[in-house]
Image (cartoon, rainbow, N blue to C red; front, side, top):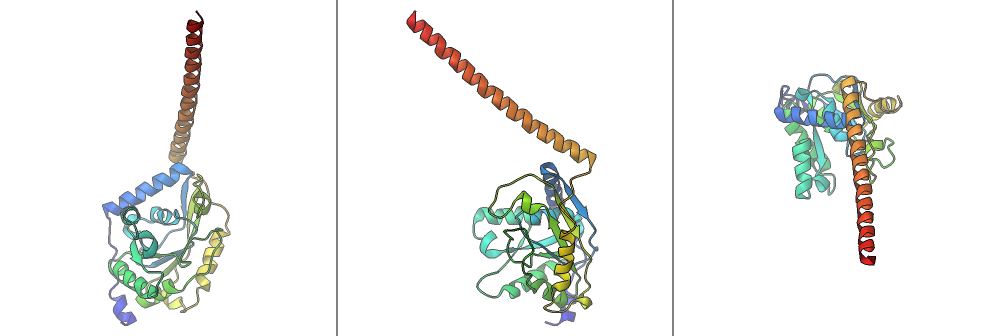
Length: 265
């Protein structure tokens, strides 16, 4: 299929959807509650291929929270991981809205091409993690060129994005630790500036965005107050549980003492 044919199959922006709005609101509220959420930069309002670094399961929700609902990217998810059990499939389809792609057994690019036809044809943007898997160190890994080939094939821009703070929040194989998350949007690269096999301009942008430092904390007074209330409620709950535990011990001790006194009497 020719490039021209594929370009004609890129649809108009899909517009507002309630499912997308609910997902975006849900993830933004969650990130802001557990440490803060900010977005630096803005994406162009058109269908494109979004590529980002990948070091946490929290990366995808962060990107869904960052983009306006009519232009939110649709995610491609590993078929061999996310679609193998019923509960994982439910999570990735209901909370993420992902499209399955193969990453093992061959045919990976063809599977990505099919997903791109479905996503870009509906006017949505396609989100791809070119590293293929989560980084265990938080550092940028090797980028595969499938996303670049898709952008050239469909003649749409390629948008580099850096997700900061998610590795500290929820590292691969690690525990959840509350903290701020920031999504930094780079400069969209037009398809005529892309060279097949050369991911250098993409990784350079993401490296530069990552080098700007740790994620900024939430600056909204409303959400700062919400975070304080949540933390205060958690502290109050811990205090209440502690007091209740002490009360149980005291009452139990007094009851045992009274029982011993009665027996001696």
